[in-house]
Image (cartoon, rainbow, N blue to C red; front, side, top):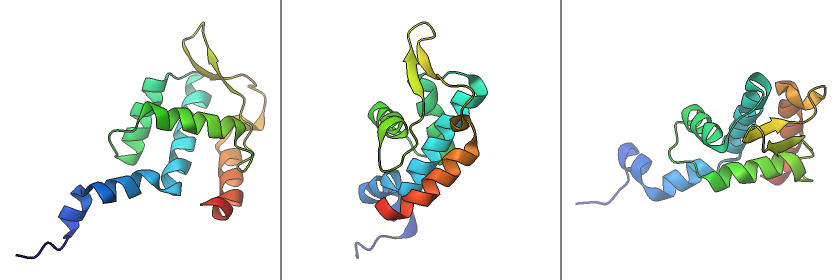
Length: 122
């Protein structure tokens, strides 16, 4: 009996799941999902962001820490240079864009910025 990983076994293996979660493209998709929630809904809780990212990527679970890291990267990661104006609003108990007139609210900004820099760091 060989222990070769077939496609089905590979998909179940923990190594495959870790690699799938750590993909730079998955980070890009999460950034897009978070951006979309904040643009279209005006606000989003961490729970809503997690659920939307899990649905978009078909990966469960995505941790709260991952989404918090994404928010931090979108706001402050100098390598990505998004400088997205995302803040937690205590009155809404959710994250919001604080600058609604900026380019950060469009998907094009996230697309161009990410792809322009992603190949250098991932």
